[in-house]
Image (tube, rainbow, N blue to C red):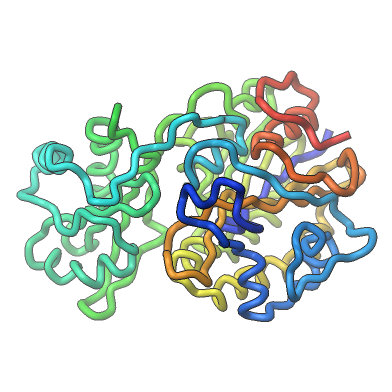
Length: 387
């Protein structure tokens, strides 16, 4: 038995789903629009069949691609990272996590402030993470009040300057919010610690000291289930946070996609009979949310350049799946995630049931297929795309 590598290119959608209008995302097409807007060349993605999934202006379809290809539909309610990754891991959510387009209720804020011993918070509204520290950072330095904000996702985010609140204390505050405040009807998908540094006019986020406090996923879910079957599981990037630290033999946090790719290449030379779950976040966090198609394109180019090295380490009995968790179209006017199909690329192609895998009815087909690959009983909803 070989290794299974599951790589999530965060925010990489391939066109709006049928229900996208319910989310305000009709017409979104992250990969398609990025190619059309920037003219990005992705020759290695082209070779494996990315241009066969949907029409891409600069990534053409090829005869006999080296990967099996298709796309996947999300059926869970929502379009955030937790929902997408959980469905990939075999969890279907009938109800979306709560969101707060008008900010958090007064009683939630009051209980949080009383619990951590502060007089109040700043912002308490949906914001871009960089904009909110630019707008409220100086007041935070003077008052010491934490900056509390959310987004279109189900997140309770707290930003503090490292000279005002030590990062360790910020993490403690977020742990308190996760365990005591963001529960029951206010059980958001993630509480996120967002430390920052710098001076007014030049604040910057400390991305490597960010920490996500997720809800504990319900059983069964793929990484934990595989561990219970005696298979080693590894997290690279923010995966460990999205699953509340549960289900992994080892994890490696990363500061960038470059580091994530480096960690993947390193681990491919070291593991046996293992499941490696990777998230490459830059496309989403740095470029999708900031409406930066050129940056998004550059991040795709970075992974495209790394593909030959990654694939050279892939053994015949290994399995690699490349996909996304939602869309995040940077060519629009809204900085939120977008309700889109995501790409599905499976290597080596001989492992797949057929070259064209069609439109999968759920992201959870990945969980089914990975269980199938490791030869363990399948407890997940969906259908395998392997032979």
